[in-house]
Amino acid sequence: MNHPVAANETAFAGAQLEYSNNGNLTGELIRAGRALLRMDQAELANLSGLSLETVKRLERFRGPIDATTRTERALALAFRSRGVVFDLGKGLGLRLLA
Image 1: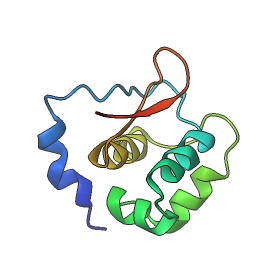
Image 2: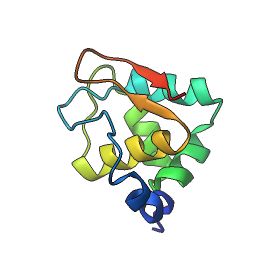
Image 3: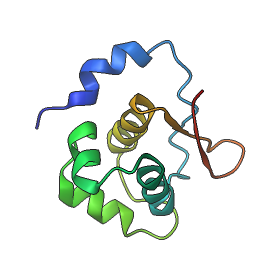
Image 4: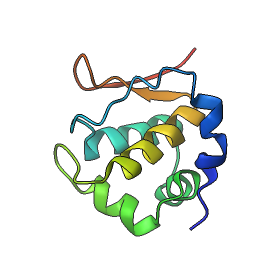
């Protein structure tokens, strides 16, 4: 599958993603991020390079998602490309970049 965000990943290489694979990314945060951006599941799937079924499956989780590091990073980069970052180190949350 083509990975649209991967092409832009070098643009984020020097940026602080404010994300680490510490098991805190939740289905609730993914849904909240989409809601904040008024983005549907298909758009997130396309932007992240993940399948629509994967996005749907991850959003059904209550609490931490069960996903690979690559999948979590793809989601984080997709949201970052639209100006949303996950703040997982200091608690669970997300925010819009200025």
